[in-house]
Image (cartoon, rainbow, N blue to C red; front, side, top):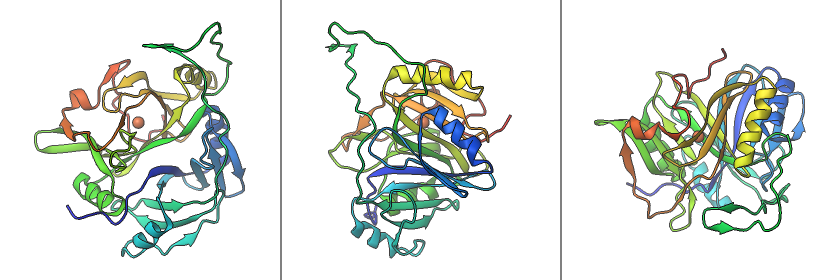
Length: 314
Ligand SMILES: [Fe+2]
């Protein structure tokens, strides 16, 4: 394969659109995100990690608009902007600042590639000691979990439903340099690729972008946020349940990526995931295609519901 134009480093934020920003803000605060700015047109939220914005919601008809990724350098933005389907490099007129190039992917989703120079302090450090596996770190202290929303750290990955998997894979590789960690398929038909950023020997999330050709229509599959620890999965679940939100799938442990997961639907049916304890991989990891019995299955916990990965409101 030809070398990609640039190699993106990490996912930055999701961009959704809903008709009622107040209602979405209430859901996302209950989900565990913190509002950094809200105006008549848009809502910007962060997690407890250093990223200033991990979720953007615009006002209008409910839709998934696209997502943003970080470039390693501004010169990568310049290289990308020379592509015929890319905008010029422009300043970001939104919280967090920096510069971006906007691309349109094969299904019409808006892919922003951004570079920021401003840095922000994390809202919390995860220093909770654990007595797990071979680790015995908590000496003479207890675990007590306040009743609260999950402590979300960061955006971990974004899943999109695509009309043509090989076309989308080719596009994401050529423009953003993502590589495939694992896939799901039957015979010679592939349904999904779990893709990570190419950082060579450096370890990164097993998948940061999921491309799935499971439905007839392109659309939003889900967005996924890493929480601090296993308590946040359960306490967050109980908090969202108590607020009356619609549960989608979980609590369980994935096979591909190994995350402990829990999926919730926002008031417009778009799926938001909490996860913790996911795999990190590097260039040593060998790409393989797995059957659906492995690829979509939970190692423990409920199996995938039939409407998973699709935006449904009832
Ligand atoms: Fe996920």
